Image (cartoon, rainbow, N blue to C red; front, side, top):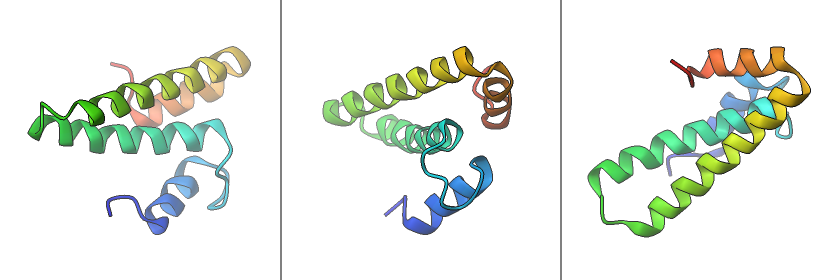
Length: 89
């Protein structure tokens, strides 16, 4: 599987406050971004997979909602996670 518990621990440790920090917005945005990248590669190879396309759109929406929440609450945390993940050009 592409996303096992060790990979999750690595993502949460890098972007969250600790390896078990699964609830912070930054760690959730990082996890969603990892999953979005994986599904995007899948969609490039399987362009007629509409179920995965729907899941991908839903994930992008969830990430956008979390980023909007961060932007409203703490602009510095928002800027830091966007820069760390390279989400904006």
